[in-house]
Length: 289
Image (cartoon, rainbow, N blue to C red; front, side, top):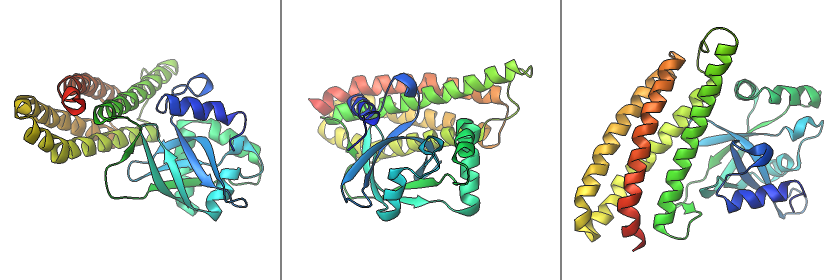
């Protein structure tokens, strides 16, 4: 069973599709359900995570700087198959403990994004805080999304992109303000974690649009011929957004001028918000009708 501190966070997370307030407001959280190493019973823990630019996310077994590993970490050592709730989606994953240089690189990136991790490591003494990668296990059929209808699911996915983009804009703005505080006007380079966050967002958006065109749009075109003009417009918007995403990736991947990256993010935000709003107006009535 979750402890008294975790349970309200879990309840709020599930009630608000991954959004929580209080001390965790604006944080990237997931719910990790593990199998007890001794009891064999499920245990759910809210954890901060780091996007890792591909087919995995990273969680850190800090235990607040304790000299002992947290229970959830001992559980994944005994039972690596876990369940992840990301807010919009729930999926099965394989937990892999990172070792050696890979662990060092990942932990350094975590510290760059949030210096508090370094403080936890100092408090933990001789205990090297583990970094665990969670790899989604592919399953047949549609994804397990927390929605009561297809239209509701589409809106939830869109809101997740809005939220991720808002976090990226917030991180970028904070970096610019930090540069101004130091007298440089802007940070010299984009932070490593911000680069990964941008690339993760861009890849997720590409996958979503590709999946829509291959599946959802084709089905709607067959069942609702009157939607053909709207679907054609949405496909054109996908192409424009893809071009903006590529421009952003070029700036971010080459660690270009932060002000240029911020401008690209603002352009993408405006275009994407207009696209998502139009798609919801046109498609949700058809999907839920």
